[in-house]
Amino acid sequence: MPTRRVWRYKPRSEPLTAFQWRFFLVEDVAGFDRLAACDGDDASQFFMLYYADYWHEVYAAHREEIEGEWRRRSWTRKQKRFVMTPYYERHITLLHDAESEKSDALWMEWSKGKRTESFEQYSDRMRAEERNGHKRS
Image (cartoon, rainbow, N blue to C red):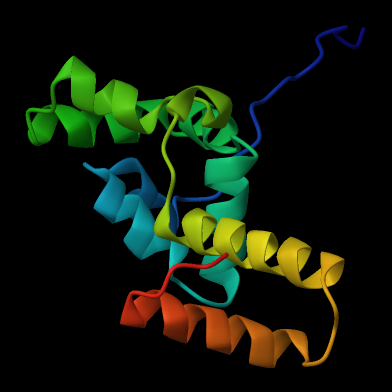
């Protein structure tokens, strides 16, 4: 008589990529800035890990490896918490985000005014004035 046993197995998880390792070993805001400056696949991975909080899933799948590396490096609870904080609780502004906010503000200012120049010309002129110390009215 056949057994009624159902064989369940945990599917193998993909190994951590080098970029994911770098994400989990970031120690300060400058580390996140360096990761945000990456291009290609790393840029999309950063978006998912940092902004979409995909690090939860990666951490759940590789908890022993990540915790082991943190123990090996003698990380404190504060360092671990820095990496494992959800995006909306981080209260950090990365350089990438600050530049984006500046560009958005310039775009709004340009779109409301008289358009005698292109946005690129306008933003170049405004940034040059900012570098030269001129105040905008």
